[in-house]
Each structure stands twice: as C-alpha cells, then as structure tokens.
Amino acid sequence: MSISVFIDGAAGTTGLEIADRLGGRAEFDLIILDDARRKDSAARKEALHAADFAVLCLHDDAAIEAVAMAQGSKVRIIDASTAHRVADGWTYGFPEISGPEAVANATRVSNPGCYPTGFIALMAPLVRAKMLPADWPYTVNAVSGYSGGGKALIERFEEDRDIAFRAYGLGMGHKHVPEMKRYAGLAHDPVFAPSVIPAHRGMWVEVPLPLAAMSMLGKLAGAQAPANLHAKLAEFYEGSQIVRVAPMETPAELLLRGSMAPSDALTLHVFGSADGSQARLVAVLDNLGKGASGAAVQSLNLMAGLPETAGLAL
Ligand SMILES: NC(=O)C1=CN([C@@H]2O[C@H](COP(=O)(O)OP(=O)(O)OC[C@H]3O[C@@H](n4cnc5c(N)ncnc54)[C@H](OP(=O)(O)O)[C@@H]3O)[C@@H](O)[C@H]2O)C=CC1
Ligand SMILES: CC(=O)N[C@@H](CCC(=O)OP(=O)(O)O)C(=O)O
Image (tube, rainbow, N blue to C red):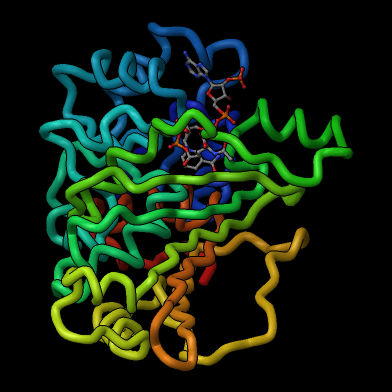
C-alpha cells in the first residue's frame, strides 16, 4: 500500500527539491496541487485531510495556517518553516540529536533551519558531554548559498551579478537563534553572523573556540585539546551515513564550489592550533540538502517506517 504525501508549497525552492527526492519512489503517492489551486485554502485543506503525511514548504504564516487547517485529520506533518521549531508539542526533526525513535513516532515534526543544522551538529555532542561549557558566549560565523533565501533571494542574486558577498542579520535577533540555543543546550544566545555568497547552494557554519582563554576563565572541565573535541564528535556520529567527521588534518584551504551537486550529507571538521590554545569547529553542508529537503525526507522515512537514508543523495 503506498503512502500519500502532500507537499504544500511544492512550487517553492524546498518543495521542488523534496518532490525530486520523493518523485521516483514507489512507496509514495505524491499529492501536488496545480498552479491554479496551490494557494487555494479549500484545496489545501482537502489535500491535508486526504494525506498520510504533509510536508509544509511554506513561509511561517502559511505553515501556521496549514497546521490549523489540518486539525481533525490523521495527517502527520513535517514543517520546513521556522514556525514550530521551539514550539510545544513539536519534535525537532534532527534524528541524530533528538533520537530516531522520537522522530519516527512523532505526529508533528519541525525541520531544523539550515544554519542551526551545522551549529547544533557541532555543539550538542560536546556540550552534552560537558567538554564545552553551556554558559560560554559562543559566536557562529556562517556562509550560505543564495537558494537559502528561497525564490526571492534566488531572483535577486540571479539578477544582480555584482553582489560578491552579502552580510545580514546585522541587527542580531536572527530567527534561527532560539533553536540554536535550545538544541545545542546553551545558556545564552550565540552571536550569529550569517552571510550569503553568489553560489546557488552550499553552506559553511563555523564556531571559533578560544580554548586557552576559556580554560583560564575556568570554563573548561580539564584541558580540552582540539583532538579531544574531534574524537568526541567522531564517536558521537560513528556509523552515521549522513553526518561525517573529517579526519583531523589541516589543509591549506577548504573551498565551497559554485557547482556543488545536491547533497544530503553533513561534514564536520575540527581545526586546532599547534599548541591547542585555539580551535575552529566547522560544518559544511548543502542548505537545500541536510539543511532543508534532505532532512525532511530523512524524517519522513523514519516516520513512515522506511530505511532512514532511502532516496537521499549521500
Ligand atoms: N531555502 C532553503 O535553503 C531553506 C528553506 N527553509 C524554509 O522552508 C520554507 C520554504 O522556503 P523556500 O522553499 O526557500 O521558499 P520559496 O519562497 O522558494 O517557496 C515558498 C513557496 O510557498 C508558496 N506559497 C506562499 N504562500 C502560500 C500559500 N498561502 N499557500 C500555498 N503556497 C504558498 C510560494 O508561492 P509562489 O511560488 O507563488 O511564491 C512558494 O512557491 C520556509 O519556511 C523556509 O524558511 C528551511 C531551510 C532551508
Ligand atoms: C540565506 C538565507 O536568507 N537564509 C535564510 C534561512 C534559511 C533557512 O534555514 O530557513 P528557515 O529557517 O526559514 O526555514 C535566512 O537567513 O533567513
């Protein structure tokens, strides 16, 4: 018996990528509304009530509306928007961090934000193990491909080829900070510095760590050499086909390529100074892969009782 999945917002950037990942799979029957009906409330409500699963690939207000319209139905929802990431009654759709069973059994799953995926993957295992303090004022420096901003930012970057670098979130208070704080287990909001480069997809999320200064201030339990942090991350993600911890070596450079192929993997790096006084934790991913559509499909697989990585590009 096939599983019906309604993609609400299937004409958008995330929705199209989810439809691509599910399209060739015999287990799923996709419900996709045509152009004339895709924003029609009655048609969306009918689809929400007919489907086994709905993946909301919508901006927050339309996602909140969809959840209200689904009331009284049996549909299980994965919401790709920011609307429910720290909301009561929702499971954070990051199986490596929330636990695969929690996601598999949930009826309401919020898909993590793209930048938080990198940040939380790096930080949660180390904070949980008390190798990094929960109460340090961390910073997050991050770079995204322009597809991270959906259709509007894609259009802007494709029209204005003169943008070489776009820093934003300069007033702080970016919408991703609450989920970063909560799921990394932090006491304070991290200082988040996001930016966009003229590449369609790709993402770099970095957390610089002044280890010697943290130790001097009594914030580290014992000396935490960069190699210890790397070993803990490697242990935490051992056996994962999705999250990979790169060997601890220091290349002369790391590149994000404009021609990056779609990928649902997430690669973590730890770089350390020779004397161990400083480290840089770095996550490299595809904002549209593990940062959005790949994560939604991973959660859908688990919720539908299918192999976790089915249909993913790894
Ligand atoms: N892009 C990314 O890398 C990531 C995106 N996300 C999140 O995923 C969600 C979707 O983002 P993204 O795909 O980038 O955005 P897009 O703007 O590319 O797509 C959103 C789609 O929703 C449609 N839409 C708008 N209002 C309604 C409505 N009332 N009913 C039905 N459809 C509607 C839009 O229609 P129209 O085509 O007419 O504009 C558009 O096709 C957002 O919440 C975003 O924050 C999360 C992680 C990463
Ligand atoms: C480059 C860019 O603009 N990125 C988006 C976040 C993309 C993402 O993860 O989206 P949601 O949290 O909305 O689901 C931003 O900073 O608002």
